[in-house]
Amino acid sequence: MTEAPQTSSSGVGRIEEVGLETIPESERKGKPSDLFMPWFAANISVLGLSWGSWVLGFGLSFTQALIVSILGLLISFAFCGVIAILGKHGSAPTLTLSRAAFGYNGNRVSAAISWILTVGWETVLCILATLATATVLQEFGFTNTTYAYIIGFVITLGLAGAAGILGFDTIMKVQTWITWITAILTIIYLILVLPQINMTQVLSIPAGPLQACLGAFVMVMTGYGLGWVNAAADYSRYLPRSASSGGVVFWTTFGAALPCMVLVIFGLLLVGSNASLGAAIDSDPIGALVTILPSCFLIPFTLDDILGLVGGIHIELKT
Image (tube, rainbow, N blue to C red; front, side, top):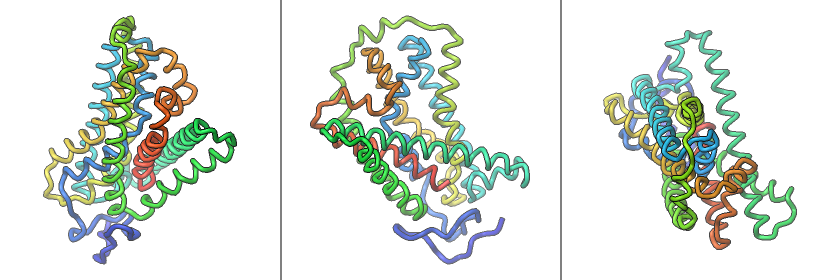
C-alpha cells in the first residue's frame, strides 16, 4: 500500500480524497476517546428496544435474556475493539488490511461478503426509518400512505447520504451531534414509557432451555458486534500510531455497547410487561414503539428514530 498524497482533504463539509490508501502521518489526529461518538451514534437506534423483544421470543426468562444480551453485546463489540487496533497500525480500511490474512485474491471473497452485509444493513435501516416516519405521519392523520413513505425515504436518504459522501471529518462532526440529540431524546422516551413496566409480570416469565439461551446469544452476537467487524478499523485508521491500543479497544467497545445494552434491557422490561407489544414489534419493529407514546412526543420520537438509524447508515455508507 502506498501513502496518500500529502495534500489535505480534511475539514468539515469537504469531500475526502483518501480512499484505500494509508493515511499520511500529517493527516493522523485525535485520541482513542474520539471513537466513542461515532460508535455510540451508530448504535443508539430505538431499534434496540425491539431486539429485547426478539431475545425474549426465544422463550427465555428475564434473567436469562439479561445475561445473554449483556454477554453477547460485550463480547461481540470487543471483537470490533480488537480489529480497531489494526486500523491504528495499518491506517487503511478494514477490508484492505484483511489482505494480510486472506491474500489479494482471497480477500475478494471477504470484500464481496462485506459489500452484501453493508448494503443490506443500509437498506434495512433506510426501510425502518421510512416505515417509522410513515407510521408517525399516519398518527397525525396523514392518510396517503404512499406519500408518507416517500417523505420518510427522502428525509432519511438526504440525512444519511450527505455526511456519508463528504467523509471522515464531516461524519465525526455529524455523529457527535447525533449522539447528543438522540441520547437526550432516548432518555425522555424511556422516562415516558417507564410507568408501563410491571416488574412482577417481568419476573414471572418462566425460564427456557439451554438451547434457547445459545440461540439468543448467537443472534445478539451476529446482529450487533459481529455485524460491524468489517468496518471496525475504518475510524481508528485516522488515529496516530502512538495512540493507546487499550484505549482504542475500550472506547470502541464501550461506545458501541453502551447504548445497545440500555435499549435492549429496556426492551426486555417493556415486552416482558406487555406481551402484545412483542407481537406488534414482530410486524413493525419501530412503528410499534409509537403506540405506547403520548401524542405530544411523536415528532421528537420520529427525529430520534431517523437520526439513530442514520447514525448507523453513516458508518455503513463510508465503509
